Image (cartoon, rainbow, N blue to C red; front, side, top):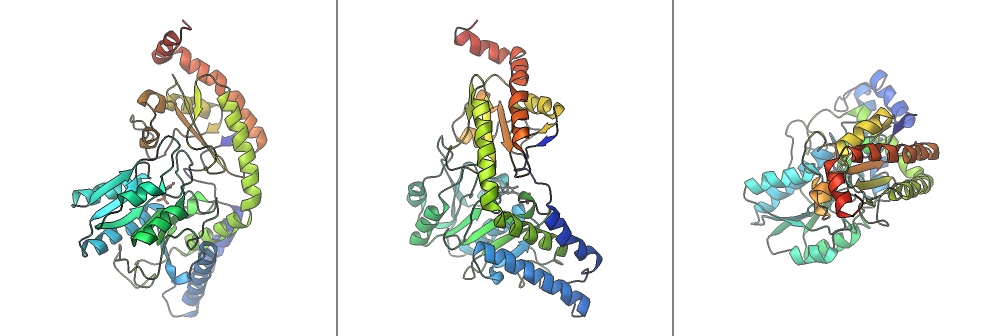
Length: 393
Ligand SMILES: *Cc1c(COP(=O)(O)O)cnc(C)c1O
């Protein structure tokens, strides 16, 4: 059996999205900036896609800027706000310890340029406390950037409360909502956000396209200079097929969200139940405030990368945490941020489901896991040590 359970890394494009994109290669191939009919058709197609996304996020179409993906949107929001606020003498930025690297590495770069960064604790449950945000805000705070939902452990932050704190204090608030949009309800008004990043390929849209929502009153400096696209704010000929595919995928994801959520939660809970039957296993992150399709687990005395290889041999595609850290020997910064010891964090497994998964696949994973884990533990000196400490040897 083949099971794709790495949807937090990327998703398979939906047929609806692909069908919407094809005419953009074959018929609507004009440049949206061209004044002739072929160009204008492309222009209208992009305009319609922008309206679809704006309606879903509850903002105005001229608050949506198309980008090349989540990483660019994060870079743009953070670097440009930093530049804007530095002119007013504000050089302090608040974020959390378990952000995506697109945020953390951007903040590192700003730190080297003289910005001061405060990374808030996310506690054992993987949630930021709005009071902590409130207490960290200073006179010179330029920006608060906190992710909507974590890509490794799936925890969903109290975004509207954090946003309310920022509003009250008059500080700009950006959220990396790449894992949230298309999966849980997101509304930029209710959530009190000033800027929000999203990415097409995380909700069955195409790769290499994303968007930044930026509230009209925020005059964000440009990240990419050139032509007049995106109301002079982000140059470069529009990725017309990508934009159209992303809008179609998002429309479909939101229309089916209720039905999909119910199905995903049932599969997630069954998977968690199966995993917790394994000796010295744990589920990471708050059990209630989490994405419908995310299961993040750790198995003591198991090496995560080996576990992935054995699962792959059984046709199961999973991840140890983030696609960005795979291949490196360091344990995930997210798992360390929730207080796990290095040796526990090393035995991590992330299964991120989509509505395309089936209950049969879940049973297949539950059956595949114990023999693999037993085999890896039998070979592990760490497991032998753990067993001795427990008096089992
Ligand atoms: C995938 C992801 C990104 C990066 O998005 P890209 O479109 O791949 O650049 C950023 N943040 C989070 C939380 C993600 O999951």
